[in-house]
Length: 189
Length: 189
Image 1 (cartoon, rainbow over the protein chains, first blue to last red):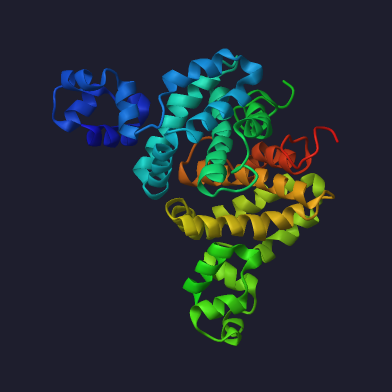
Image 2: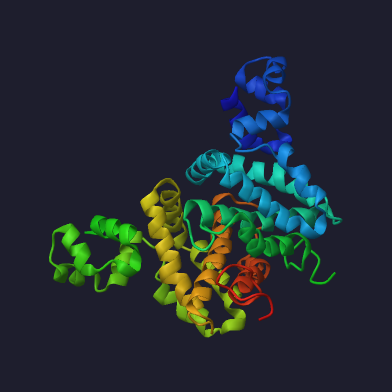
């Protein structure tokens, strides 16, 4: 069932995939999928083998408000990766780097399940939100690679709050600051 | 000889490795290593299977001056990765993510061979230069992952100059702007 879910999510993306379609690909009744996983979202987290459930973490990030969004997203990322989620996260990154399908799953997880909800709090057109979310993703993935995979100093040995202080402003600029890219308004608007 | 070089560079780091030590590990005469590779740097590039030679690319980046350093580094990165260097670069990242030794080699390449030379042009204490170089690395690796591995939009489809315009300011802040991390001076200094 999880193999079918991975195939369908990777092929169609999170939004277009359905429990009905996944059940059909797995040759089982949709009710069985519902019984085991409850929702499309929970099935997706299991299929991706996500190291943490965004439902548990995002409310605290979002309730901090727009001005601290960059710092709070970095803090959440470091909390997951400095904790027991690290092994699962590393496995996911390894798989994504060597396998096109897993890369698509990880992208869907990051974009559709994490960043889209982070940027949903911004008072901006949807297109611009998506652009800003994608740019923030580039810095967040870079922190994972530099701190946990390549162990580049000073990020590898810095405390969580030092990472937040150094990297948070970059993520904040992508989310709410002046950014030049099609779909965003120009600086100072 | 390359296997011995990889082992020694990964074990000792670029600075502490020597042609003599690598020749000894390979069981050959140092003159033979010199004959085939010319210098420690060229041997390192061959051992890492670097997708591009920083000697060919960095002069243009550095001669643009400090104010454009962030944009010029991003431009160089995208030029290498949008071109024939991409296949070799992807192979290197794949290997680094799954193999601790290759991760160390890639880190040495990025830090000792690329970023240390980028930050050498900054009028700052060495420790602060290294801190800023490491932070810049996190954003540059993130662009590679987002644009070429996970293909996160808008970075995946953006033109090179769009990437430079969006990401360059983040790299510039790490290199010359206000950054809070031990070893850096505080904002505005």
